[in-house]
Length: 485
Ligand code: ATP
Ligand code: ZN
Ligand code: MG
Image (cartoon, rainbow, N blue to C red; front, side, top):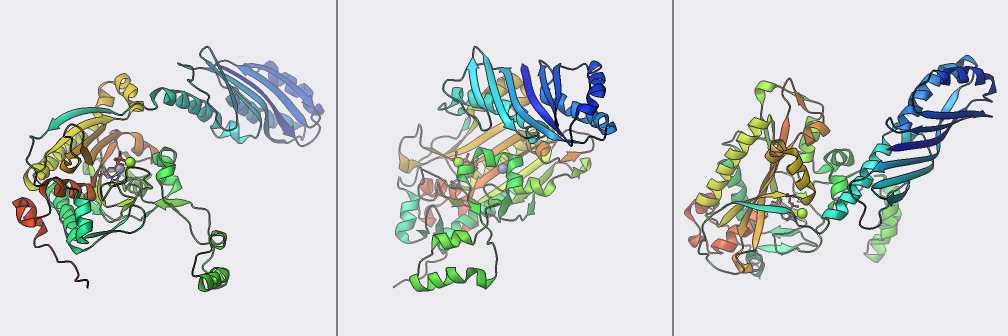
């Protein structure tokens, strides 16, 4: 690595008076290869370092030079980067061009050169440089796994079953008027459909969640950017979030023109609307776990109360899904129960076994599904898994999938209906959640109620008398549709 920094520290007045003292100081300062010059109201520095980062050196210098200039009644007024050239090793050369903000990049023979010009002190103080180096590495890595599929390994599969029919339940429900599309990927559930979904919810709660000791929480639907920066959602899926704008004001006068235009044209004047909205600072719930972690941020959990087991079922999840939307199985707003568990690694591994057992009980004995479980690892984590050994092996996601007969091919037409994840220290660290002695791990499991419903109806059909006894007990008599003329 090579950190070659040319920068200037501005002084409150001509610095010549301090020249002797500064010279004395640098004689005893051991770090890096440093050239300096006082010119008018600036101290120019040229620092070349190979191990310690030059931007750390300059911050250290700044602190120690302040009292020296101070003795001559000269104040220091911040650092400016004139040019910062950083060379660092990369494992592989990029496959095609890479760019990042604030710097130009060059690559040759396993070395990346990053050049930053004419920037303020925040680049040195606030960790930008290290994050820029990490971003370059990440972007190179990504070029190598782009297009590769996530790793999928079958863990278990139920026996083949005979299914009641081979039609698409969303289409049939639409035909009967049970569900109605309300704009892009959002459905209205009339009483029979709502009753089925609520039965799914009760099954999950009474057969899995309560028996394992989870307690209910209710969270806000809005999630702040701060929270999503910590979980990584804002960098991971900014294009899937529904953003929320507050109005600039709730005063009627401020909205007068907007209302007048609406009254005259019966249309929303978009330009006028945008004038009245603030820039978003939050978005609609994407998954419930981020707000649960945010609510626990900074807390120390009592060791004897572990594992902490919580669930949330009040807040729908909204996602701006692009292609692949179909019926109620891939939608822009869906209903999930999410459970979150925080405890020691051993506790979570035990819990995962119990969850698998309970979910299996539901799918086998109540919904009587043809289903399977697979361990999935996104491609970029696969190397980490190999490198990390047993510790990394314990983390990861198990997907639960159900076969959809209406789609045909049994070898590939399976739908993910839920998952169980253990993420290790990632989130407890990000939100500074601790316990007295042990290292905490956490994880979550998201139960997609639309997905349970589609899987069940696709396999069991739409005739309640033919449904498995276990499910009929939960759903009871289906309510009738309103009578339309
Ligand atoms: P996919 O790869 O299908 O997009 P995902 O990895 O985005 O799924 P997760 O974020 O892991 O899904 O969410 C967990 C559960 O939430 C899924 O198992 C599924 O039950 C449900 N889910 C996710 N996206 C949707 C959607 N668009 N419509 C309905 N349910 C969904
Ligand atoms: Zn989650
Ligand atoms: Mg998705």
